[in-house]
Every structure is written in C-alpha cells, then in structure tokens.
Image (cartoon, rainbow, N blue to C red; front, side, top):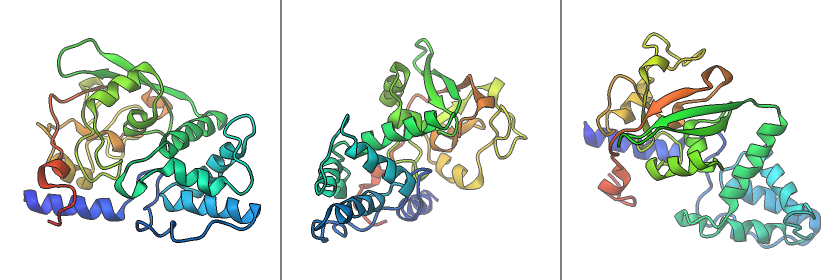
Length: 252
C-alpha cells in the first residue's frame, strides 16, 4: 500500500498542477531557442519562457509588465528574455534565482487590485508555543501563504511546513489539523465558513502523513475565503517527506 501511494504521488507530481502553476515543459526546451531579434519578439519569447516555467499566461504577462516598468526593474527592449532566464536560475533542478518570488509578489498585487478580501489564519504549533497569525487573501491556499506570504507569521510558518511537492498534492508535508471549532465532518467541499473532511484523492496523501486524524487536511487544499477569516489549524509534531525517504530522482 505504501509503494502504491508513492507511485501515485510520483504520477501526480508529473501530471498535475498547482492552482496558479501549469506543468513546466521539459528541461532545456526553452533554452534551445535563440534570443529574439526584435523588441516585440523579445517580449513574446520572454512571455513564452515564463509560461513554460509553469506560470499562468495572465500572471506571466503581469510579470513581464513589472520587468519593463522603468520605476522597477526597467528591463530594456531586447533584454526581457535574458532577464527572465537569469531570474529563473537553474530551474531544471529547482534552483530558482528570483522568478518565483517576483511572480508571488505580482500575484499578490493583482489579488489586492482585484479587491480580494484579506483573510487571517491562526496557527497552533505542536510544541505548545503561543499561536501565531498569518495574513492571506481570499482564493489563496494555506500553502500559497507559506510560499509567498510576506508577514512575520508567514515566515514562521515556513519554518514548520516544507511543501515539498510545490503544491501539486503529491506529498503530505503541508499536513495540518483543522481545529475542532472549524471542522464540520458533513461539509464535503468546504463550503461556507468551516472545513470538511478530505477528498478521496487528498486522503491518499494524508494516509502517508505524520500521525493523521479525522481532521487532517493538506494546506495546499485549504482554499481561504471571507467566510474562513480567523480559521484555526494546528501543526503536527513531525512530517513524512517521501521524496527524501525514497530518493527524489529514483523511479519507483
């Protein structure tokens, strides 16, 4: 059963996408293309490169606009693709050099401009330390907050949650417990202000989590909303990262 679940995790990682990310193209595909010969070609090539790294076209376009902004990055015509590649770093091995952080900041600005409501989540550490609060925007997941949150609470949360699979529900490292007052066992689909039980697919990953219980959820599957402002979750005392346990590059 364990091996079957790990194989499923591998397949999920290769074929599914996080809410704001698409599946990246194969390593080296974009680098094979020559630099653009005109400003318009350069912008189109840069946009394609960012989309191929897994970002939605709308977000990629906003990143390009930020790179072109004279008051910000101020990338000149003909240098957008080069700048995007530099920010992507050694993306083939997951060594991002700033593109992810830039995209996260742009995405947050887009959400604020769209009038999305702020949402807070109270986190209870397993160690018994004082709970802390993280700030988010409606539509984000708890994993999004962990990855791109800018407040002190988000920085603390990153120390606890690894989010090893980048939010594609192929691991259990963002496992949390929903506090009893915020859990409704009959609320399949998480409608309204409370969270319900995990879906069958999510439960497959939770079966591999550290000490799961009936209120266990994956942070990447907890989508925040106005009704969930003030949501309370507890952190488990440990985590199981099968990517480390079985070796990240081995076929199972």
